[in-house]
Length: 115
Image 1 (cartoon, rainbow, N blue to C red):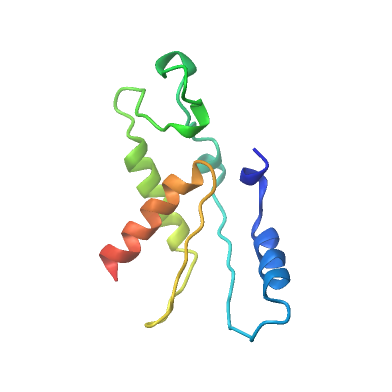
Image 2 (tube, rainbow, N blue to C red):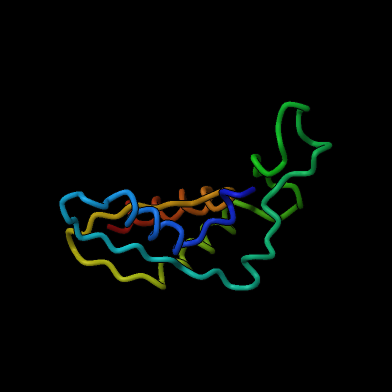
């Protein structure tokens, strides 16, 4: 749970601390903002549908008829990518924590597909 609470500022501070005394490398760490409706998406899975060894926050499944978590993650990732500008030759790393890793996967798929 503590990992999911990390912010872009935490990553910036960790990068500065880790690179102290090292050769300077130009790195820009950017964050994106979810819409309120995106923050309300329930990505988890009800415990009664999982084996006893799985934890609901670790599993994403389509439960409701007609609702596709895959499609919702694609929609959210497109919204997040609209907030960023890239130049040809940029080297990009994507970090997604918790269920954000599922969205991060879709961000990377969009980057690769539309590059």
